[in-house]
Image (cartoon, rainbow, N blue to C red; front, side, top):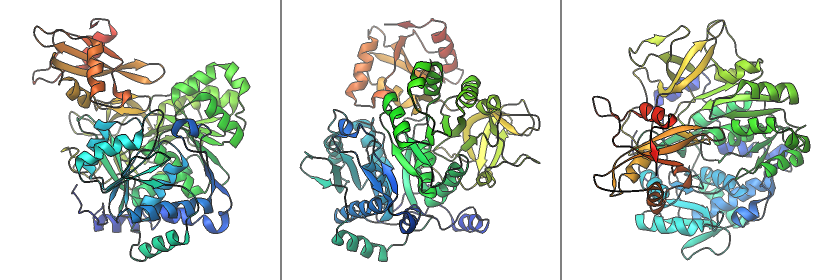
Length: 579
């Protein structure tokens, strides 16, 4: 896709595509700010969003509970601060905050004034922040004085100052460094409201304008930037609201970082569409999580498969927990065990939704309404568009799915033959931001090439069975790790001749990473030295390999590509030596 001029609205889709999708009713005039404002008249005094109870320990800020009216006023206050800091329509605002009310308000404030949110995981450090700011062209940045024991906004400000582009850095909390503007939540002043209102007289939100740039680790060394407009997000939100049946009476608990499809599409936007209550949680702490479910009477939440399995196997914990309000739990990022899905349904009356998604536009949900058999729901996803089969989630009707044989290019229409999932429709993004990849993610028909391999199955060919990932990703506890990125950092060590980073199974996190290192001739290096080398480059801690093993050479195919499947087999068999 193209690079857009600073200070201009960023339309993501060609006019003919927009006209076609609007005519079919797939895209509408819905916008994020419109959803928020729609709750004010009749639900202004209803509690809308609330903080985790351990917020003070996490970032030094007091927990908040905001009604819809107070939320809207806080959005105006932050929006006014952004305007005074020089943020313009079309500017990109980097955002690094944990799951707090400040994060939600910042999202809504940036979007309200026509700017673009680029959320970063709180684990990101200098390396990732600098890369994202440079590639996406950050014009402003928002963080907080402290995240854990780290001076988050001061660290980010130092990195951003070296780029010389970012015009404003703003922060929540006390003790902000010089040059960082202070942000506070609270009631907007009359001057704030007037400033925002005057700004909006000259700007009208277009649902085709870009509102977020999220980051996904692919097989390349630079994380890929995924821009999205209101159009695609609203289409996704219709699916993720309809599948669990969310209404204004629901209470949603989100423990996943609000930085990508799983949490933005899975909780933030369906919360806005439904008018439910949003309960925030981070970092994941099981006692706090269970306490919030009981105290806030949570009806819908997300949880990693490993956590759900562990809870089901630990009756002592469940006996002390009050889960009586929970109706549905969504889970994904790793295959679900059929026994786990069946156990929650039969022993506790809680339906597990099997979710499979990506930042680019895949949004598959296997819900109890469509797949009542827990064994099937754990393994299969609806094959939307199957002739003669009607699914209850009508929001998925416009989505087209097909499988393609990666060797022959043929479309697969029968069971038992693996193929890459190709997807089209209103949830699919427009393309990666320029500068993050040269790869075209779309095929000749314009469908997204997901890199995920499925098979057709079921009595009527109505299901998809997940087989494997074609792309070389490691998914560690729901966080994507691009092996090439880590390899490019390790190879800088003078004692390293070759390196390959691979994933290996882990019962809790799904996968962990292992660096396979070939020392340079005559050189010696230890695993501890490799990890220390990575730490010196200030990368996120979740990207550090749990294992470092050594080999005399990397197995390669005839064209020189490292055979990572062979390395995984050798690691499993103990054929690679650790330091």
